[in-house]
Image 1 (tube, protein in one colour):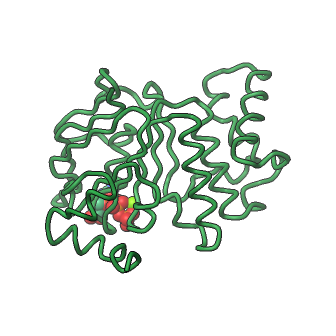
Image 2 (image 1 turned 90 degrees about the horizontal axis):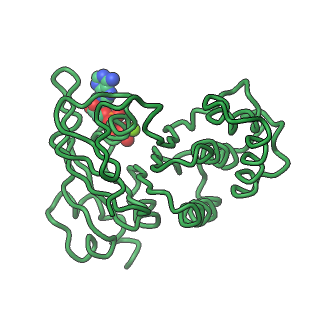
Length: 242
Ligand SMILES: Nc1ncnc2c1ncn2[C@@H]1O[C@H](COP(=O)(O)OP(=O)(O)OP(=O)(O)O)[C@@H](O)[C@H]1O
Ligand SMILES: [Mg+2]
């Protein structure tokens, strides 16, 4: 079953064609990574899916439901922005509970949900801390817990590993993958980093200049890069495998 279908979506900002006839199918429960260089349109693609930006052309589907013109709050999408977007004046508990409050979920149910999310991201006891009192990796986990709080049908992650140092990255990747498996939430994660893409993705879509130029399992792409641009973008992986 399909989780997300982006059907021939284009989006321009003035003369810049940020998305150029993008087509992408993400299966239900799949961890899809979109990998491409800075400025190729990754964040734009997430914002169009989230509903913050309206596509100029094309349509967006979740399952069998078209969401192209649906208001953001009716899409049930969890989103972790490029800078995590935590509310600095709210503590960890309040950050995670935010979406539940907006939805009017009762206090007791919110308490229980936040408690189980904190357990899931291994941050029990951190409820009262403010974001500035957390490490980068801890902040990232709070942002994830906040995005997952509403039980989203789709999770969008924008460069979730960019603020994580190399030493803790392996652990964060393991946590992220197991959290995604546990919740079974269809996930689209964007990154410019080929190594992260190949460690995270069930499948990888290579994006370049507003277009998806190849999509497949990591192995498929390595063994059969579609063209010279793909070859160049994944060159760091070949070096690692040598
Ligand atoms: N609001 C905007 N107004 C004008 N141009 C924009 C706007 N948002 C993005 N762009 C342009 O659209 C293109 C794609 O931008 P986008 O932010 O999607 O890239 P990205 O792949 O996320 O890059 P990065 O890896 O640096 O985050 C870029 O050329 C960018 O300058
Ligand atoms: Mg971006």
